[in-house]
Image 1 (cartoon, rainbow, N blue to C red):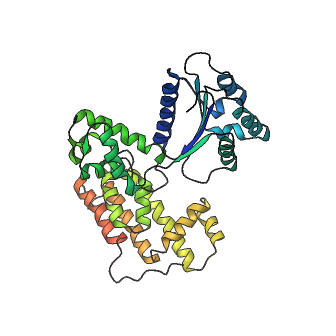
Image 2: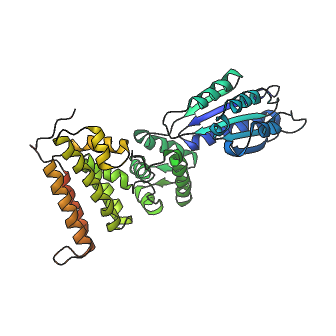
Image 3: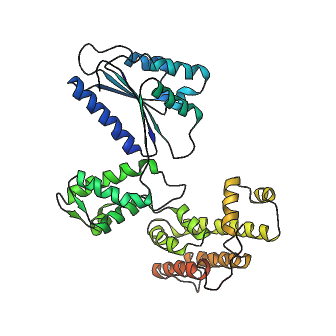
Length: 353
């Protein structure tokens, strides 16, 4: 890295920890080359303007390490044609010895044309762009082994898998924010390293010290039930029953089964997708998801499952003759999964289109 040229960069991805690490590494490089740590200025795009950013980076440092300006959520600066043009001009005003970095931490969905255009403009101006993807479920266990070595401990394989589970690696539903998953995992590793300095962390250590922040995902459980994936639903149910009040869980389970029943009955009568959207009165994406999942069921199965939910509700409320103890109610939930969600051998499923 040359001190005779400005530094421009665009870091993006759904792994907020890796993006922040890249910024830290850039600051370290600037300090090494100049002999002094740069002044860091970090601002959200909605709280600044191109002109304000230029005030920090347009003047070359006479002494010291210059300024590293980090602009997060830059899309806020690009909402108008004038804003886009001002940002592109800004790229040309960064003085040698300073650095300007744009940080886009997204959710992995489609990026806007404006952000893609800004990234291309950074590259055109001689800057670098890098993308950082959060480790996927099958990757996080190995990733954790590497991060554990960095903090001076060893994870055995059961411990790595337990930690991955507790930070949400194996939950794929919409209520899981993967942008902070790596940072959460590293934070928990640092805590474990204080507990077992220089030693081996076991699954028992993880269970004792790491809270289950993500896997208690009600949406994950509901989706597993909808898709009749009992092997996924059962362990999620165990975790939910430890942390979520039973009436709350039933208040979400009942409506999900009703949605599936409406979708299955609608399909059985050859109703149109548009009519189903009106009938259910929810977002079309949710209707489409329910209609797809309902193909795993028959109308009769869903009616029986809904009746089973009403029986669970009676058990939770302590109706006479129902299961009264916590253990009995927990067993009742497990039996509901077995009796109504598990696909029985030889059962004919509806054809999937």
